[in-house]
Length: 209
Image (tube, rainbow, N blue to C red; front, side):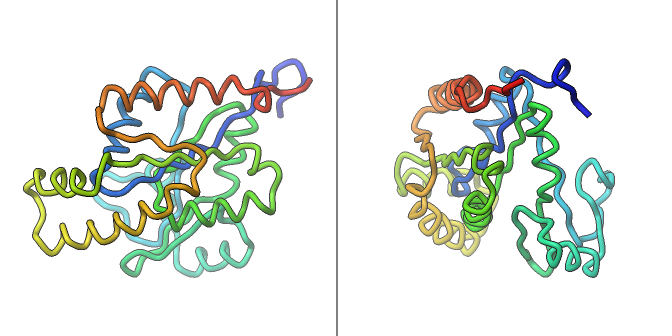
């Protein structure tokens, strides 16, 4: 347990990052994290089976449906969802442990997961202080479609499904604290980096000892 002499100078943040497929959010945060340092990914729980090379506790916590349902009943998850018959969830303890140790934790989640975290913020002052909601926006819907088609790796059906999902996600962008428009990748990476550095220096992050 940290004491007043070894406690970090600031509390960490929960960075909730959303954006439609093709917006470039993964490219942006991967490019920025190396320079920023001090950012970790939370380890989620899942009921699916491990894939080759995946390690329990590093990639996911692989648990049974019964255990997952028990955690839901205990309100242990900050957010959770069922995808293609498998359940995924982010434990509140995974986030709060890092925040209290002055570590920033990044969640790359969709707008539904972000909405659950926003609701949690309304009930928890600690989460409210920690959470920052960031949306990565493509410059236009037409540019998003061009990027998805340029990949050349998906069927027309898959592209149309992603575009439909993207349209719905973009309608929620104004619910986020910060919006970064990825019309130029270098500029978007720089803006993301500067945003995180600015948030780290905000007075509300300073720990009172």
